[in-house]
Length: 332
Image (cartoon, rainbow, N blue to C red; front, side, top):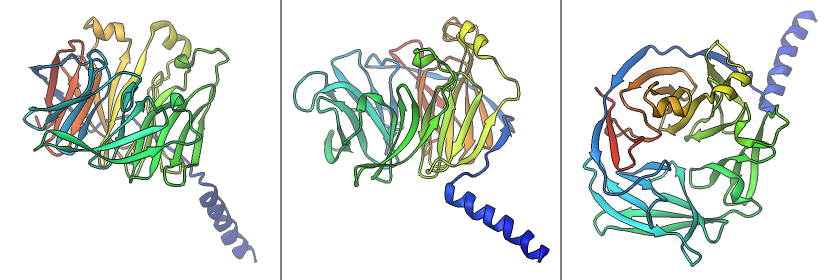
């Protein structure tokens, strides 16, 4: 009888854990087996690019710029030849109040921020005719788009986003059924109303297998399944107090990019002022879908936004000069 009980209890526990999705999270030390030094090739750019989104779509790179009248600029890869520019600010049909590129794992360029605030439009880029063709549209019913951060569409039907409001949640939303599938609350310790200074604040990146949440003010990234059950957390053992972080304006993870089976993160570990003044350099940290550290790229110039062309093993970024494109060869 005792033997049966000993077998049954662990079995029941396993079933319960599976049903609730509460997989125990494993902590991984942030130790990279490979480190490389990368130097940027600097290419003068036709448009003034602000520190907004940049994305690889099929064999093109798409830049977002709110500093000029035309908002979206598309170039071919790897030649970096201009294909077309489109999109304007305004109050009319098909114009933007606040443009946002919606990341996705298809070959489409998806955009939100229209005058019709619940609308997401997806386009196919026709390089031959130098035009974009509207192929899909989504309407987000029951969602305040003003609270949506880091939107990502996976498999044409599931929207992931970070809801950055009084309560912070990671949310998955079924675009076809127009309802929330699942959500995970990010713990809020502070009582102040300064949302961007919350110790647990961060951003999500998603691919077809994994959701990753990187922390702005902690040296930490949490990797999860699509149902938000934990896989692994990668972090440094040394902890910086919230008081020290706030006092010195330290930012750890500034930006990221989700590849097919890798995640690329822009790591600072310093203040933006130190980065701008050249006192510190940043790096790109690469992890697999389970959070295992793969490689660390130390960069010779500071960057703020980037995208990775995994097909050609190139990284495109921009830094303090908004009229210069920075190109890094990841094979070097």
